[in-house]
Length: 361
Ligand code: AMP
Figure 1 (tube, helix red, strand yellow):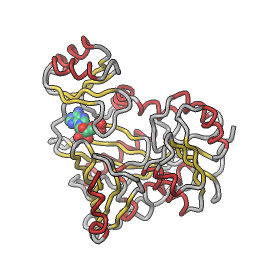
Figure 2: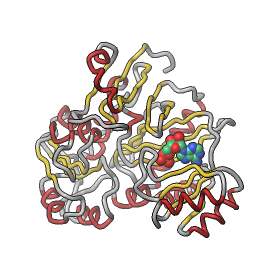
Figure 3: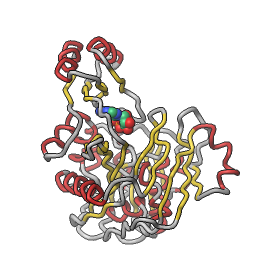
């Protein structure tokens, strides 16, 4: 078993599980620091394979391939957090894994995540465990109003969730999950959504980026804007929420806390993402140290970089066929394309960040 008591020096290899655009941007940030990457993905055409030193294309539960991957790396991290627990344990027996198995286990499951957040004294939407049709009915009665039912695991971009306005709808939605355990959450009539992207170093150091306001369309992030309308007291509160979560998870690396901003100004935790996050892409152009570099620094045991923002920024995702307008888009901002061969409906093909002079430090 390799251990990590000192920083991984330049020339070392960071292993990344998952080869999508997040893995691709992590590999590019690692290269800037003189580090190598080795990317593991379950399909051979991963966007990150185009920019990495080494790669493995094998299923996420192929223990032999995971062991060979671990042997090739000085530390392993994730852009895709839904690896089975036994596969994470298999890696962790061989190589330092950052963030650790405990943080991944809590954040992989909406019930354990929300319970953890509540125990920290932070606010969330009311939530109930639903493992049967009867429980779905009972939970809706307790909620006493509109809700959202969500599978506990493997949901993303609105998949595995449904809005429900009656007990019958709650039962029907639960049954459409084909037996997958779920939670029923109260519907939050929020003013807008925001997120904090933050990092915790191996030494416990903490750094948070300014929280952007986030707009979704068809359950997919459309736009992140900094500065957000949050007051400076709310910004401090949001960063403190992230700090409390990072500490309690003994987290190493970058993570995001998605928030609902209530009409009364309250900050409710919706979700914790144990990885770099789409709402932090603007940090590449608007901060001295991007979320991707920050994550590589934390995983490698380096000092964290400065998260200060030196510009206002709007980041927009380029989704599906919108990418066909790449030439026109290239004239209007900092364009990032992810090297995906085919555009499909709802697929994130790239993003564009437009900067303006700093208005609110
Ligand atoms: P999630 O997969 O939990 O991040 O949810 C995806 C999106 O659905 C969020 O970004 C919100 O726009 C919306 N949403 C999720 N949960 C709730 C809730 N309890 N109340 C209102 N909207 C929600």
